[in-house]
Figure 1 (spheres, helix red, strand yellow):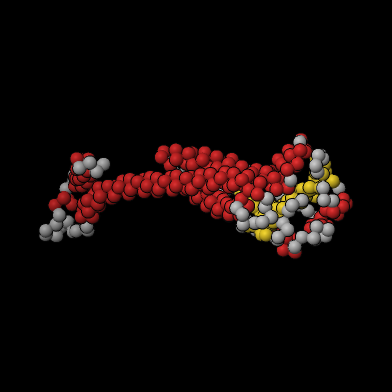
Figure 2 (cartoon, rainbow, N blue to C red):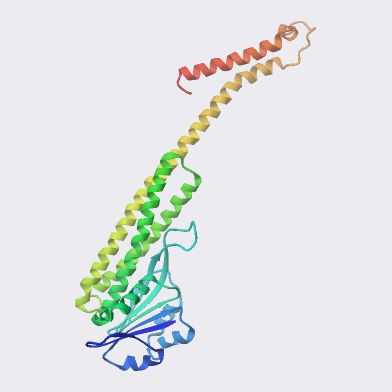
Length: 329
């Protein structure tokens, strides 16, 4: 689907235009445009080449998915590949998922290209439909609005991770389960992806607010710096939660190790108590001939069986008492 929004200077209104009007709008110097390609058809994608005459690398970048955010300068326009944070679609998935969006921005137009619906685009579209004057400051301010909303989408994800870390802390201190270890490792992967994504997006915003790119107007650069600062806060939160999660993992491993030690101590005590009983049973289980000289007198004693059982019980009780005196139990 292709949506085209047009604003004509100096005091026009924002309206939606038809695809057939694109060539005329590109030739109109008074028109500012936002073109939103959402899951476009092959025919709609072909508009990038003609009549827009974008570089073939732009078409290739839009068509091919990329896991890395990047910025490319084509002199007359910029190509940005960014990723919006969103809640996972599947249950028990990682708390951080992304949707790729390619953005082309020039002096008179802003173009967004994405295969799936993107929240920051939807919100900006709703804003334009409510108040078309929002377009009056031009495509670069629309780009700022888009990137600002994209960065804000990371905050609910960080809040969800914060809540999950607190729950994990409570569970690990109480009675940790193997599912908690899986949750910890899943969160660590999510935070690592957030740190990597935020670092790459910060590089893009740094290039936009500095004087590295001649095409970027000076009056918009402080706004991009403000978005950069918001993204830096997200990166700081990710680093903080990563440290907290490392402590939770250490607590889990320590608690699991203590539980294992308790189990091993209990089994060792049982084995130690049973060892002398087994020895006694082995001695009296030897097959001696009662009539031969030097036989074991207890073998012919009517109470020998009860004596052996009593001896084993006495040894067991004595060991338990000894362990308690030594505070091993």
